[in-house]
Image 1 (cartoon, rainbow, N blue to C red):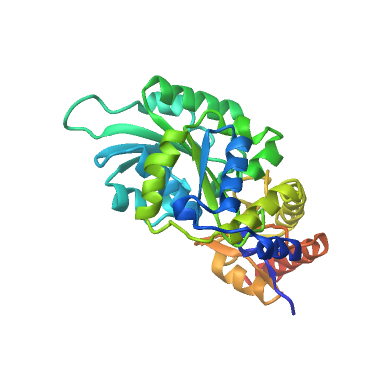
Image 2: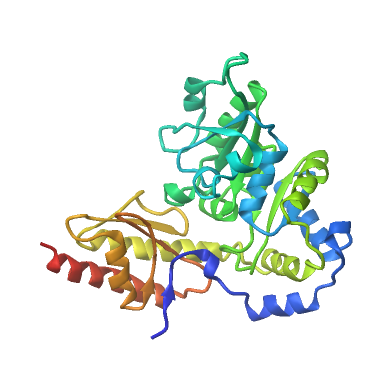
Length: 353
């Protein structure tokens, strides 16, 4: 039985065309700035996001941490929402690497917004307090169900930050999913922010790689320095940068619409299934967060039973599992997975005390 792996879009594998592009890649030493393929990718992303420069790094976590480290000092304070990736899923890097404290603020829909920021405010200019220095947002927002944050929310939050002298960073690991879901161009979504990160190893199907984009002085200066400090200075890495270029030039972004449609099929099954509800409502992108009724089973038990039917999902809470559609899953496989979700729920529900 072939496993239908819906744990994450990070499980995607390079296509034959992408592998061929990687094999043909022209390379050089990127630490010296001499890898022509990396240089081309950075220029492409900077242009697409409307930024002056971009820096290729191994991972999205490194991109986010460089954004934090290059725009704060030890003792500063960062503002983000309580479910932000940079806060919850990056090993405490904000505190451990940079000596920066985090204050979490949730707006009406869970993410940061201008009313919530206004209510929270910045710290007083007093030696007893940390200096509020940076606002971080995420789009699409993973732990809020893959929702696409509206452009007006991004703009008003960043306007508030600028009015208070704060820098802004967008964790755009799945920004192109937000582009497809909201039908707003990438440069428009990125425009309000000082820095933006993009990940290639999720929905775009690349084996690795992320970028951080922003002002040229920041990217070529402190961000470049911190990449080296964190061990992210790579040599003949045009081989993997070629995969990212291939994804940008061969419709991988446009293909995300198919992943979103497949997520809707899975959501339909979850809505019909006994004991299951959608944790964050109908999916807007490729993430389907499913709550398992504790009267029926735990999330882990449900996922274990589902895997017996050939479908793998991520267990992300005592009662929560997540199904993530991606380019390696066909419509037929999606429908098979949907049937398995419904059937598993029915079987487990019947067994519940």
